[in-house]
Image (cartoon, rainbow, N blue to C red; front, side, top):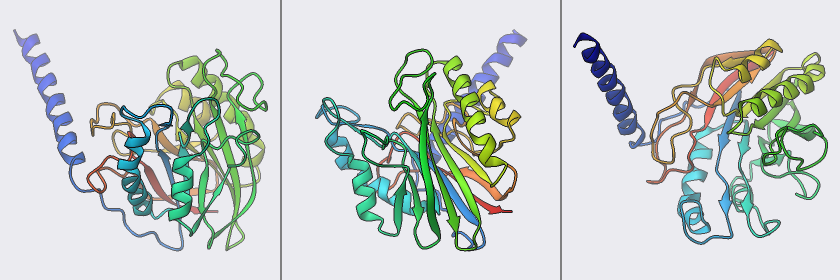
Length: 299
């Protein structure tokens, strides 16, 4: 009887925690403090694919029309200097004719430019890195796929699953400080894929990290304490804790620890806490992930 009582107590405690999170996430958006000009604000945001070949369903073109203003409001709320996006792609038959999310955010945010983006036949556009043009100058950009042939565009992952990759951009700020941002999205189903992907990222950032501060951000599909993050931590990356869940099923359901993260190498000092920005915008969920944002000072 005592054992069952303990189990029921744990169950109801978890249920209360989940329901409490649901109530909080259905309220107004969480406020974000204005950044200090002395610091660099970095964010990562999975904005979910648009399926253009289908006119109905949760992630159709019609759905994009409903949630695009909410996404714009959430992007402005971050007030970030750099935002690494994942899943910013519109799918159609064969190659999609447009990238609706990228085009919309570019049009509505003229104070930002998009790095790590180009002709999708030569440079994958799914993971652009937005940056403030009044503060940052783009020096270089690139990509590599999580594959045995990482420099072959759209090559499938190590176990033959859908292509997944890292985009990156190198910036110089107005003080002359140079740094890089690696923006990744690992394959969600396979732990071995994620671990091989993390090993590839660790290998690719080694040389740049010896010369400049390097951020490693994105949707890792892995939680703190996992082998995936541990591989990068062993390579000198520190991951700053995110606040609770980051994937919420497009329903505000905070069931799992954070799978989106901001990490960095030597020469990066966090200022305050790194946290997820929760809540609806304009009465809508912008996407099924919360953005993660943090303030940093570079050495």
